[in-house]
Amino acid sequence: SYTIGDGRKVAITFISQENDTKIIETFEAESSNPIEMQKAGFQAILDNFKKYSEISK
Image (cartoon, rainbow, N blue to C red; front, side, top):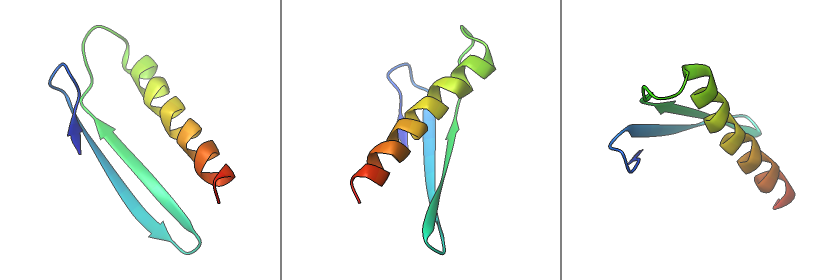
């Protein structure tokens, strides 16, 4: 887990599932932007990580 610059916490859990790894990211939402926008931002990071890790195999 880590802390974002504004003090919010983010936790990341890796779960092994046969030939795959499931990544669960939990974050403290902020009040400036809608929660769906924040979820989309974190999901975009995970999607890019997935693309990178699949290319790097």
